Image (cartoon, rainbow, N blue to C red):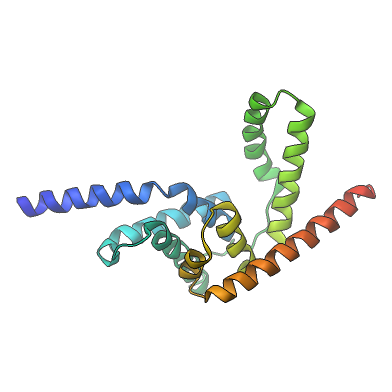
Amino acid sequence: MGVFLREDRAAKEFETLVLAHLDTAYNLARWLTRNDHDAEDLVQNAYLRAFRFRDSYRGGDIRVWLMTIVRNTYYTSLRDGKAMSADIGFDEDLHGDAEAANDDSAYAFNKDPAHALEDRDQRNMVNRALEKLPQVFKEVLVLKEMDDFSYKEIADVTGIPIGTVMSRLARARKLLLGLLRTEQQGDGHGM
């Protein structure tokens, strides 16, 4: 009986640790899969794997361990042909409503509706540009800029050397800036 109580307690402790990083896992999954439904499935599958193999966790930053599992689960599903919709682009009509719902909070904190609209437009422009980045650049950029991972943590998650992380991050930022400039020039010409 005591063994079961210890295992149950250990499982609950593990659950508490990993659930604290659910938003970070979803954020990475969303950018990898490019849609909400697949991101939810990916996070669920990754968390099931993490729970099943929790004995393999040897300490250290559990967030890095979990994001590695999320990333590996995604690439395994691609390899196995299970993620058919992984390369579908961002659908503004489909996902725009969720963003509009989030914009309500912008009005609550910022009394100027014009400023809130401008913020939303800029966020949409950055999201469209991010969607156009190649996957290897997008994932390092998302981990660094959105989830505030260190270079070492990104290297651990992606399995690439820190120098490659830094190089990809620099190239990702340069590509993103170019895409943003191109989009701004298109907006300026009435496109």
